[in-house]
Length: 176
Ligand SMILES: CC(C)(COP(=O)(O)OP(=O)(O)OC[C@H]1O[C@@H](n2cnc3c(N)ncnc32)[C@H](O)[C@@H]1OP(=O)(O)O)[C@@H](O)C(=O)NCCC(=O)NCCS
Picture 1 (cartoon, helix red, strand yellow):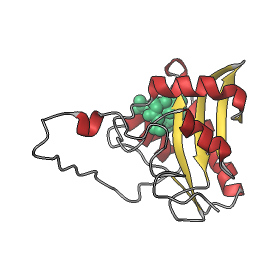
Picture 2 (tube, protein in one colour):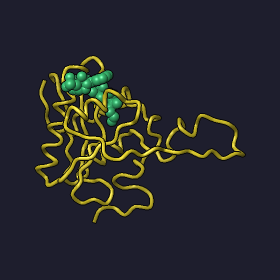
Picture 3 (tube, protein in one colour):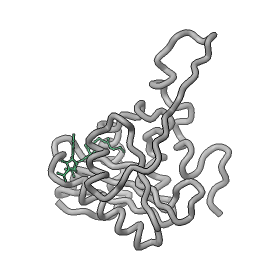
């Protein structure tokens, strides 16, 4: 197994693996799409890597030097390992490779966020040197006139082609 930079030739496999393993309803303000991956490839100083067995992508990590308005903070946003290859330390290697390149690019910190019930991801990050910093709880107030629905937390994203909030999206200026 080798870890190499994400290239265009890996896009299809990365996208498919993400669709298989990410539960995007867990954090309803995020979405997984080709745009998500492409934005990382398009972003200056991104740190995106794939774990390869032969030509097969068995894991990936997507990081960038973009975290909100902090110039010196980097963001490790997406990581996944194929279920058939989990538990072998692949994610640890991906996290280390990603962080090392972000630190080399000038990051003073790498930030990641983990949904509360994702024990695998929380353990991975803690074993990789991340420590819990800020806890944010997503409080939701439903519209009392709307029919009762689970969709507040499980509906499809409204803007599937724009990853809301992180790099470039509505009401945000692109990086100059
Ligand atoms: C999270 C994920 C990437 C971990 O991949 P992995 O290759 O199995 O992780 P590793 O083998 O490198 O394990 C890293 C550490 O986490 C621990 N760990 C992994 N899976 C675990 C689980 N299900 N429960 C508890 N701990 C777990 C390992 O024991 C290891 O700790 P150690 O070094 O002390 O032994 C993988 O479970 C995954 O793809 N999950 C779905 C996608 C996801 O939720 N990504 C995060 C949000 S973007």
